Image 1: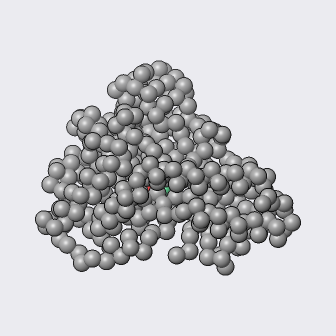
Image 2 (image 1 turned 90 degrees about the vertical axis):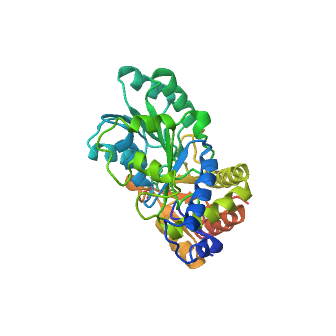
Length: 362
Ligand SMILES: *Cc1c(COP(=O)(O)O)cnc(C)c1O
């Protein structure tokens, strides 16, 4: 397997791919319901929640939409400090919600102080915030933000996008008092694309009962009715659920704490490599992502030059996202990647720099 250092879709282990190849079971069968039941129970451990996890046939963005449709009649405070926070604000706006954007410059965190101030000025039903802003390689301080929300506006529901962090960086839904946390299969969980997982608190379920026009496909009340029967309202992605069930066993066998430590060690190694070679990191110190590092181009080197060099070596990294395309590049260190993969990548990048007579350290 040639490693891809891109923040999704990531490489999937061969045996996880193979787990999908089992014969298709009818979803309303006891055999499939058993698998679905197991997968959901294990998924709760990933979110550190005692509540429920909905498993939907969609990508993560589908659950961004579900959050705003189920949990807000009208007023949404959307935190935006990167492309995916911005997307969530747009998702809320295009679903007819009244959205106030709380912005921070890309590369700077959303602070609990700014959130507290916004909530003091006005009442909001929900706040949306991204845990790991993949576009800028930044981790927002979710625990502190959630504490600020609870202190100032206890009824505001806290919705968190953990698409590029869940299973790679710690996020404790219940202990931190979060109401909805969503993720996608194709990032830190290292599954094929096509599934989204959303954990929803009891008080969020109560709120959903009062919100009209929740839609059909992602209606939390309908999803819950079927979840209690170990199923989904519409046909689930049966093969992907096999892979999820199998991969969650692998993840829990590695151990969540070990997995977080592996991701963090790879992040530290990549950051140290970049700064030692005169590259600047996009995200502010203290808020750097554990799963993807965003680096400004320097020495005339960016994603295009790097990928030209890596392609014959069967590796690739990611370009900057949106407005940062061509200005920055991103090295993902998530999913199945191990430190030795990072060492292979960084050795190749050093060769590239040396070929251009750019100094490198040993
Ligand atoms: C990738 C990503 C998304 C979009 O997820 P899809 O599964 O492609 O819908 C949303 N938020 C973050 C933080 C992401 O990294």
